[in-house]
Amino acid sequence: MTKLLNRFKKPLQFALALAPIAIVAGYFTGVYSWAELTEDVKDQIQAQIGDDRNLFYLSTALQTLMYALVTGFFGYILSEKIGLMRPLRLEKRPLLVTLGLTLLTGLVLCADLFYYRNHIPQVAAIYQSKPTFAYWMASVLYGGVIEEILLRLFLMSLIALIGWKVFCRREAAPPTGVIIAANVIAAVLFAASHLPSTLQMFGELTPMLVLRCFLLNGVAGLVFGALYRRYGIQYAVIAHAGAHIVWKILWVILL
Image (cartoon, rainbow, N blue to C red; front, side, top):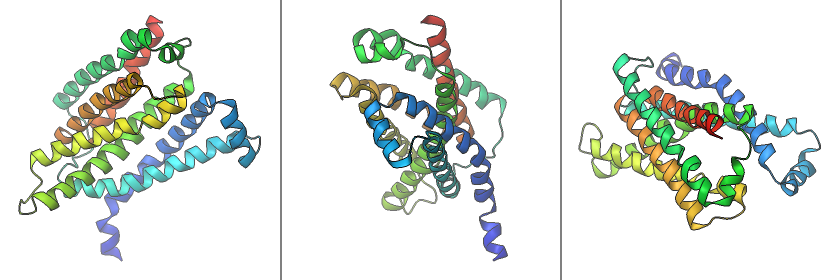
């Protein structure tokens, strides 16, 4: 029993450290999501949980907590197996590279402001008002932290492990090509995972909206995955959270 606990001590500590972030991220994601729901959907939810919308916020927080604990724990183990789990500290050079890529990725996300807003009426409607505090918190904490644990630490690591064992099992470690392929696949899945929310937000999935979804999220996902591969998951988290901050600061300033 002691050996088992020692074996999983670090993954468990890592997962538990995510717990308070997950609860706060999930709560504010619930607040933001509720504000974006149509009245019909709200009525359907309230028919199940009653008029207290705090139950909706709580359920979102608990769901996020569960995701973080499970994928944080197993993601840590998977990352160790493929050699991508680095010491969870920050170093000067990787941090400077990360901040530079954070700025560039934030500017890519601003294609929404500079291009898509002028060509897609549904997108233009989003920018009629400033981002709320709940949206800031959900973007930075859920997007920046939880999504990176789900999609990079867990999913990308899992894909890389499978690719290694299926195609390169004679290699002592997963080849760089396998990890890069895993990054591409995870980035595509990351972008695709935003299609349901795009449909919910705009009520349809036009070719332009689908292209917007894959371009903005796919490019960002490739950058975050590259940082995870090169430097560690902490740098992917910083870049993801920071890109949202850059995007929303420009949103506030320019509109």
